[in-house]
Length: 461
Image (cartoon, rainbow, N blue to C red; front, side, top):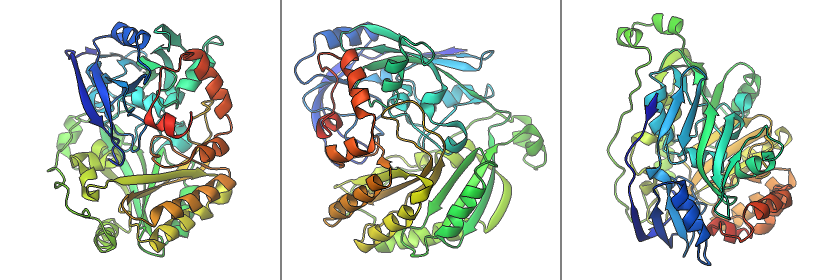
């Protein structure tokens, strides 16, 4: 099964920002035809260097680079699915959205998906994305068989995790935020499925302790697990959803005859765009409290084996175009950390400190992580990860996040580079202990220092 789309040629000056829209910078955006176009641009790069960019869903400054040439990779989006092997070979600009429309009807799913399907294959590898199944199946990089990367000399490299000659370069590129080279193609394994439905158990939990206890108890029982936490309520109450891909037998137990006839039908829905920016945004403590109350009450107290669609379970916010507008013109940031199980208390502390400074989050998500992979800059490690979206304009937010950074670091945790927009170089060096190893491999792959980003400069990478 093969699919492709025509390539576009374009070069223009643009202002780029992350999904949080907090720190835009100007760059020269280039839409390349091929890997050779990318290689030639790298060979002739100016002093501000080059960077690859996908769909711009990194929240901070990872996919922008002031004064640089930025490759718009989304026009390189062909892919080929090997149904027999259960693998796909895709251009770096192919998105999870592109893939799902093709592979779900064929009986497959991506091995890992983030909370949005508008992520490119290159971006998924560069950020080593994780999902609701990390405690079972790890992050995206664990499923990549090989990739092709243009290095800082303009040479095309074939990297594999099982090749001693290239494995260090492979794992430095996984989670390397585009700073080791430009990923142009990757082959990765797919997950076979019987239907396009999810069998989901949902339970309302009265407080944070109940949420976390149930999540630990369910680590071995569910492929997918995630909790939404009411960040405004002092109890930390939440809604826990866990499940797996529904089987044909599970579908036949329902009365949804259309889905029985076409069990692999995959459909997405689009809701109206979020409203344009309004002064101060739409989110404040009062509106978030009202939303959270409605969301908590909407969830069933305890319901097992309910069928959900793939988009509803994995990508609910994708139905609202430009939902980041609700935070207003100053934008928002996401604070996401991971800490070991022994530091689970930091989940409650973080929620409490955000309440203290009036930084409401309507999207506060708690997940479990399993073992880390060999990537020096890969984010996940075993334990808890909390992600909270908060408006960026709160003048009291910075000191509180700096305080939380120190606690995260002291407990052996770290922040996610794909979501970060404000941590310090010292924080990064303290929390990613293999940073020097990554820099050594990066320097071999990019001896001229061609690859750079606003994030790279901010963190002295």
